[in-house]
Length: 110
Image (cartoon, rainbow, N blue to C red; front, side):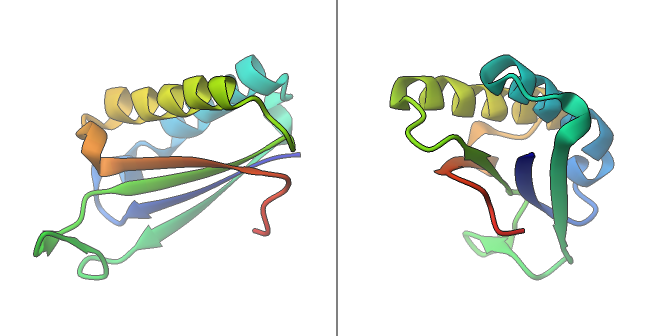
């Protein structure tokens, strides 16, 4: 099973666009890993206002974590992570500096 963990700020654009982001993440999983979109598990963690700050201001950043097969090629990992960031920026209108994407080898402990 494909697993993502997404940490977003409650009330921000990403919070209102989870359906679009989920569909996009499922498509990327299918494209890069051959995932069955019906088997993708996405866990959303919403940070309440005032729980996350950047440079003394309330944060609008999102964190996206994905498990990938052990030994996944680093060049392909970079392309995948760029695609995740592009999806986030295109869907939410956020800055590239407001999304952190990472890919861990092996299953996530959700």
